[in-house]
Length: 423
Image (cartoon, rainbow, N blue to C red):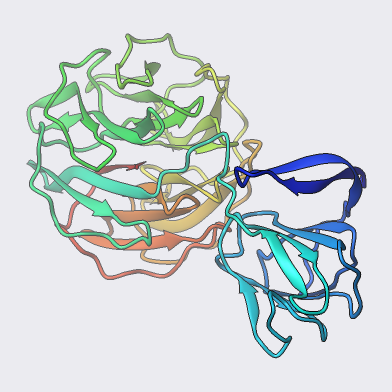
């Protein structure tokens, strides 16, 4: 709906305040490539698909005000361009180019008169709240070929560039899980060594430094999955103990402490994946059940860490896919081994309400036993895995969930690593 909010007053502290009356917010979100703006209006501008050129009124009176808001935090990908339509903008004629290209920006302009023309009252970036979006990621551990395991890690920059190997800390293993906790840190946990299954964990600092082993809590198992929930906590779930497929979970506190087993809800599975959605919830899904069948069922995780019963499969069942968040509040499952034994690159998007979409044709090298994490606050990356051999290729995921083609690998080729974001 449309409604009235106050003309904005700039306090002496520099904080913009709202008072009653004045500005009308247009309820229809602008998605077109052009907009003719009117004084007295506020506009939500969605540039997910294209740049938007905004034409200001050709005549204005002192005190006229217009506000433009980055609706989906996409101006960094597709900017807005302001055409001042014959009037000055901050004292410059409209022959100058005026652009705004920062995610999360709000531009609030007021007309001051012919000399200075339109002046930004504020054009600040608004921090996304309430969820903190981590900007960097880390891949860690894995196998270079049975029975050799490694504990090396590779950092992922806030632009999706994978760094070279960092010397490993902690028990070398494969089939482990990893997730975020404490809003800006991560944790690796559980897994399989050449000698059996373990439940050790390794904390990751907000600068990407991996700590030594923490004595495990919970049932020893591998081929597990993990995700964050509640904005600052995490959860490990499901897996294989060496003798049986299980469905129990272990909560991770906002200080990185792993709790004892929580009884299983839903069908057992292993070789599955998990990711966040909706800003504060999670989802486990896909994998293999106790009979060896490839399944696509999922289990939602509430913002208090409660795991729900099985949701009927939409995705094609497959073994050892990976999953990560993207877009700030959505997720994606990708890759894995199909029932016929072939690897695939298909993906399934997860909406911000936890609904899993049907298969999207794969892009990139079909493989299984890979890992994935988010980076840059709203994007993701799949990396490493097994095709007919062990590889280190990566595939970036845009903030709209589009998977890119292979990026030549950096770091030790390995399969069944873990990955999470931090910072």
